[in-house]
Image 1 (cartoon, helix red, strand yellow):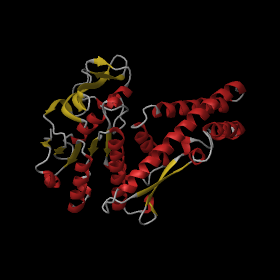
Image 2: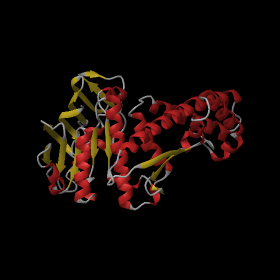
Image 3: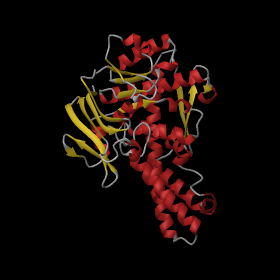
Image 4: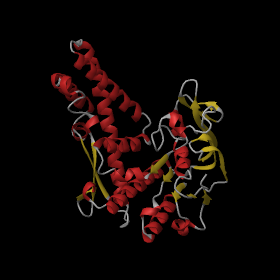
Length: 367
């Protein structure tokens, strides 16, 4: 099991100093009025994992406005299968970057946090996942993949950087063909690796989705729309790389006008279907979309638990407010079955009556 037993924030968002201790390993329930800072606490927990956290905010946006001179910092005691780990992160004002400390030592990079801490979240902003642009679903998918393969983010970055450099050279004109060849080789190698990681993960997640038999949070059928992902199941990686590289070379003229590339992992979309109804998620009702999304997050948490032997920490922001009492009870049972620490927020404590005797309940005052 992984759980935070202690969390402290300094000059983070709305908090100048807050110290939460003796936290339950099951449920941590945060209640309070809108604007009290409940989501800020979840965001702080999310920043103890690699990346930009659940809001993808810039470093300066995390700084408490009343104390701009002292940089924000987050520290926590994390209970893991390896014992208690002291970890923290904060803003380095000299280099304007995020620094990470583990057991009192400066970590080489954020990815080291993933060795001790896995965190999934669900926020109200994600409710539009199925009707937003494909890029939103790609980011959602890549975050899930990253929780299993920390090298995935680096491969995505290498692909995007190579594509950006190639686009710039093509638009400027007169580029050295040798340099374009080198960038296209990098795009082909990293692009196929990205597509393969996505396809493998979706297959594994689909297997878990099929085992879930909750009518309240229905089974989702998952597929990827992308040329590389289609080829992954039929051809060798080398042959796909060769084909993609040839495509890029042949499309230089078009790409010099339109930018980017006509094919590649930057075009991939995650397609979700309500399995029982055979209805695309984008065409489902708002309630059905919410239930499908919760089901996907629960399946992802289950997959992590089965693969790693320990469930992730779940951050569920205002989830209970949108569910009726029956679905809330089912959700709480499913979360208890997964077995990890769950942080939940809500404006009314009555939403969590089903958890009255479980976990830590904290009321956040409106400052």
